[in-house]
Length: 84
Figure 1 (cartoon, rainbow, N blue to C red):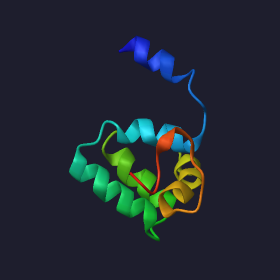
Figure 2 (figure 1 turned 180 degrees about the vertical axis):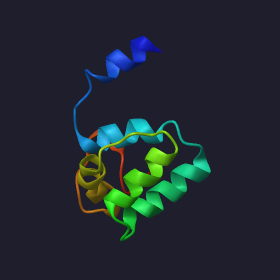
Figure 3 (figure 1 turned 90 degrees about the vertical axis):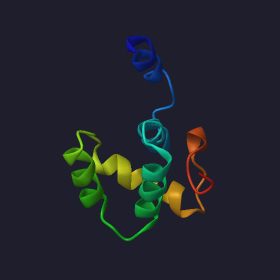
Figure 4 (figure 1 turned 60 degrees about the horizontal axis):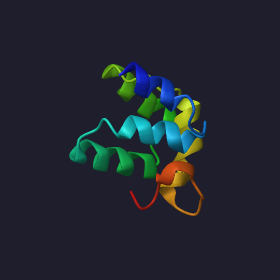
C-alpha cells in the first residue's frame, strides 16, 4: 500500500490524474454517477462536500480543474475524461 502511495507521487501532477486515481476506488455504478455529476452544472464545492461526507478528501479546485476532462473538448492527462 505504501509503495503504491509513494509511486503515485511520481506521476504527473495534473488534476485529471488525481481525480482518476480517486475514481479507481469507486465501483462501476458510483463511477458512472460521479462522471455524470462532473459533467453537470453541480458546483465543484458541492461535489467536494459530498465526497468529504464519505471520507474522501479532495480539494474543490482539483475537481474544478479536472471538469473540462469530463465535459469533452479538453486534452487530459492519464486517459481520464469524456471516454471514461
